[in-house]
Image 1 (tube, rainbow, N blue to C red):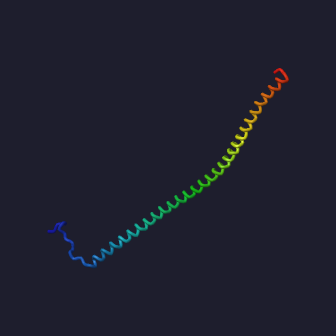
Image 2: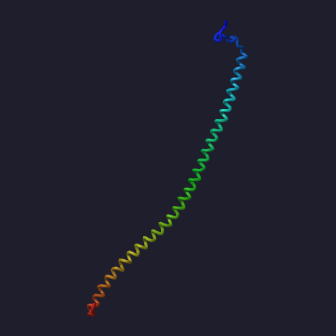
Image 3: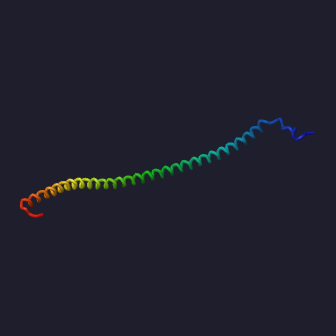
Length: 122
């Protein structure tokens, strides 16, 4: 009586049977690797496309930022020129104001002297 465990495989396996099985396994593996390679290449291409898209956005943002910065610096240059002109005017005005104050103080002294000589009542 033979039990299911004691069932023996055919001990004689010919070379042609092995070659057939090997060829079948090889073709299945090649098909699997080809599909895997195609999927891998598609995935890598998607990653590169995404990276290119991000780089392009960064370039556009950098360009826009550079333009924005240039516009602001030009505007600030104009403002600084106006501030410089105002400072120069204030310096000139301050000098003139001091000179006028000295003259006004001198006028008071001169008027007092004239009044005292003319003996005018103040």
